[in-house]
Amino acid sequence: MRLIICGMGVVGQSFIKLLINSSDSLYKKYGIRPRVVACIDSNGMAFSQTGLDLEKLLSVKEKFRTVAKYSDEKPNFENYIENIDAEVFLELTPTNLISGEPGLSNIISALRTQKNVITVNKGPLALSFPSLMELSEYNNVMLRFSGTVGGGTPVLEFAKHCLKGDKITSFIGILNGTTNYILTKMSEGLTFEDALKVAKMKGYAEANVSLDVNGDDAAAKLVIMANWIMGYKVTIKDVYKRGITDIKLEDINEALKKRKYIKLIAMCDNRNLSVQPSIVSKDDPICVNGTLNAVTFKSEHSGDQTIIGKGAGGMETASSILRDLIEIKENFSMP
Ligand SMILES: NC(=O)c1ccc[n+]([C@@H]2O[C@H](COP(=O)([O-])OP(=O)(O)OC[C@H]3O[C@@H](n4cnc5c(N)ncnc54)[C@H](OP(=O)(O)O)[C@@H]3O)[C@@H](O)[C@H]2O)c1
Image (tube, rainbow, N blue to C red):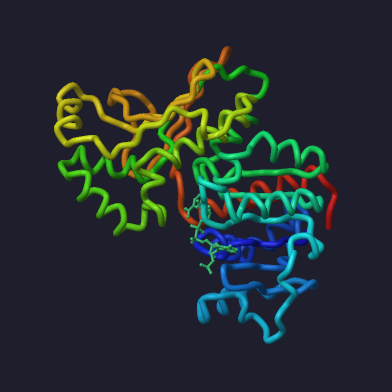
């Protein structure tokens, strides 16, 4: 199975490490022998039609900060997605919720040239989920995105596969770990500004933290869930959204007096999509603290089911890519 990996940051490098560590078990258990034929970062590309040496790739990236130094030859970078033969394209570039780029064009090029796509980048899906899904179906390839919601926690698979046969009528949850961390710290007495500083120090905030605190990141995940789980055809414009920047310590303390917490809650109910700070009882299973995410699915026959887990992290998200890769392999017979 030949892979093109676009994006070699936290997630990309974790995925390469995971491939190195699990190559034997991947072959024994699933018959997958992944070969990374191209790897791209913002400065260039490493390419080998027979497969890159992954240990070397990691050390080149660490030493020179770009994969372009992998060899002295400069591979042809133009239209590389169309021109390189591969079965799977991995989209691991930064999330852009304004234009979706560069991820959106990358995914379109890959699908049009009949490559299966795995993306952890939410931007293209938040803006164009229905049309990208159509494009993948038209080209008879798969578009998978487990890591876009819940990091390594299989939120999408839980709803789609574990609750198979039942009808999910609504869901509610905490989809952004950074804001949950900030609100948790505020409930311990820190101001919003101080809590945000700690979140940044610990590396919990996205490069553009406004995506988190304004509710955009949670809204993007909500859109992905609504399309995939509920079958809606919606984009981020359909979400009513309010972030946490105007939450005061007094609001938090007032809630605490009643054994309640303020959380950034994403909800999909009766075709309404919203992300907003809401008061949650301490006993509610979605009332998790720190960077945890939690989602309760309400279904017709099995009642309420809650899934809780870490919502991000390089290795956790890389593990979701591996799950998608296995699913693709199971659907297509490929080398
Ligand atoms: N980190 C997490 O825990 C996590 C969890 C779930 C989802 N995600 C999503 O996963 C994606 C990647 O996250 P990350 O944490 O790995 O980000 P990151 O560390 O910032 O890495 C982004 C990578 O994309 C490369 N890149 C940027 N612009 C590019 C372009 N035009 N063409 C090719 N490569 C380009 C960067 O190149 P350089 O190396 O040259 O800068 C870098 O290698 C994001 O969309 C993020 O929202 C992340």
